Image 1 (tube, each protein chain N blue to C red):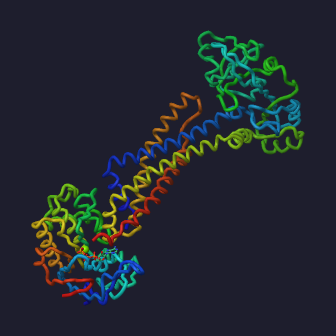
Image 2: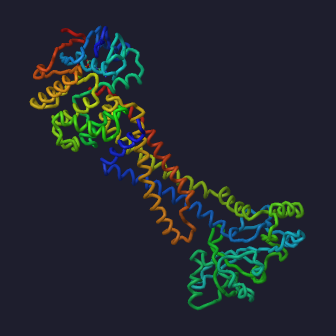
Length: 386
Length: 225
Ligand SMILES: Nc1ncnc2c1ncn2[C@@H]1O[C@H](COP(=O)(O)OP(=O)(O)OP(=O)(O)O)[C@@H](O)[C@H]1O
Ligand SMILES: [Mg+2]
């Protein structure tokens, strides 16, 4: 007997009870949207947490082995940067400096910590979207570029810039001029970012050792084998720095947020709750469908339909509900991603891999509900029919 | 040729241990090819239980029970399911699937017979049987829109469409008024006689005794005549 017939019977049965069908679809859709939002937030937060390392150009990087996350780096002697130039394959080494400074909101005067990032803006090792046209302006003393994707609590900087051109703000009790904006993005570790030249960074952050850097970006000569250079540098440099590739740097940062914080767990838990709620709804609908048709199911058994056929009917119904709930669920999630991304500035968007994952979870959820509801079929005893 | 139904020394009890209650005792019964047998008897005499055993809806306990050539004593579930496909059942309640039209309900029986043909063949055959039971104009109607007698006639069509080797019916007229009850059993008889299907029909209804070739009475789990 073909698989198609029980599937068709399942569909005809579901279709007959519109209200029940729609509440089941709504339940699946709800679970689907919930899981998509949880996984979307999770990935957006991790993406935004790694915005800084993602934006850094460079084949290799030097970091202190004890640095857990880039928003609070351990510094190491800047001379390590120059030591790498001993290898002919290393063409540029750019020290990067990071610190927190207190920003005074230019509109209401409120204070908030902002991440200050300083480096040789002309070296080309670090480039954020929007930075290249600002490079010459940033050479002037006491100038910065503001990250327009910072949290709105820093004030409407981009709007003010558009309105009145470059203007002065206070960071760490020092007047600096905003000459333009770059795009980087707020993350867990930093609500906002200000980018500046190495010299201007030293003017703002006076309390730190001048000879120390927090991160070094290395550019290699074209055609150089990054893995080989990484090995050579690891052998060459003292143990106070680690040599990592760009991917490793991003993974390092991501790993910190995934493992050292409950964030990953929270979103996994939220997804699980959505799936459990969806499963209970689908189970109840399938169960009610069987319970209210016990006589009909028993009749089918009496007619010679096997238990396997009836189980396929239930699983078919579960599969149909999964499909009918997933499609509007994924569409609603795409729309919601857009709305939430605009409201929170988080990089929230539909990702095909996540779509496949959620489809798998939703189908598994409905399959489990079907397997549980199926037990009710045992109550359909053809011997009770006469 | 063996009889479609041949029972010898059949016994059956419900319950276990102290609660064990025999319902059928040392029962012998045969139904010949093409024969219409009515089974009557007081309530609780075991008629329905006997029918569920012959219909392979229950596992046998004692005796021999050959139905359409299949020995049911010790038969595995799969053999019983296969046998049921060759029997047409008509219940007191029609038990049609509410979400299918009359024709779809009837065609469901044919889904159990893969060699019968495809969907269009099934639907055509279902339409023809509905015509024979006088429901040509109601083929595309769902059961809720049919009268009790019409529903039972759809159930008859469903039982007959796959040309079963045996029809088992338990009080098929109990839920019907006099006229529809009369119509339904006469219809069953006419269709069965045409194709030589034997019928074993349990009834309390004295008004339909005239369709029988033979009337068998049961009392206290035994055939008494
Ligand atoms: N599932 C069951 N479990 C226990 N006892 C049962 C069960 N089904 C029937 N019985 C008992 O078996 C006996 C025979 O029942 P059965 O239904 O076969 O009688 P019947 O002749 O069909 O009666 P009626 O004319 O009322 O339909 C009755 O005493 C009944 O109470
Ligand atoms: Mg009975």
